[in-house]
Image (cartoon, rainbow, N blue to C red; front, side):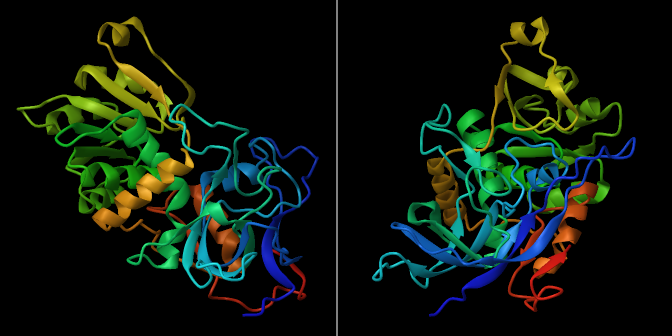
Length: 370
């Protein structure tokens, strides 16, 4: 099929150098802009993006709170669509549904990246983003979308899946029958961690500040949950654990702060705390009490290409379906709604834009602020 010379993308605008009002964070512009459709280099394919997913880093970038930000870069780390062209005319991927890998520089080493590491979208490296109608990408950086997923569901998968996979299986080595706590259920990574652990045969409990999110987690297989806004939530969680195995083997945490002190009394000796984020505080207290109990505290960030391949094979085997937020955004022009949802933090599942909807021209035909 022929491809257009230009297409639309959400481009990060020039940073406002003035200081924001006291008590507020800066908010750099993002615009729906007409950009050239990239010419393919050797070893690349062209993907027509059908759906793209949001991540917290998208908000951090617009707030100026992320390393390597580049004005003029296309935003977005998660995307799915169809290969419409290749540098190899006989490429079997042409016409195939695929999703894009969300990072570069980390192939397979379980310890960490082998080269300079970067996450796709909004930064100097890598130089691409998924909030675009067409993306040129290295052939080895797309994976075929499993047949049981829609493109919207596939766009909710890559970044959350690779992060959750590493935290749950590479770092915490979750096994059948273990008692697992996942904190802060509602975001894409926590929900994916829940799906992974349940599919692996673990007994999973969750925390949230929302009774509705706790109930929805139960519908995904959680044994129960507690509200972290209650000061005595660790004691309440302890009451929920089975009498024959009343302690936690693993904690998958995104809060940081005092998590070790909060759960210490309900951790078994040698338990693993796998931390992939620190939303409560940018540090974790770890005392001699945890040392004497042989508690293992493990940091976990993103994951390798091999981790993503392993996660996708597991997803396909167990027919897991990534959870998408109730409202799927329609068209690139609706992206600002996605940014606002991410800032508010009220979502359950991944926020996704369906690029097949709302495909009319941007305001003025060339550029339109969100």
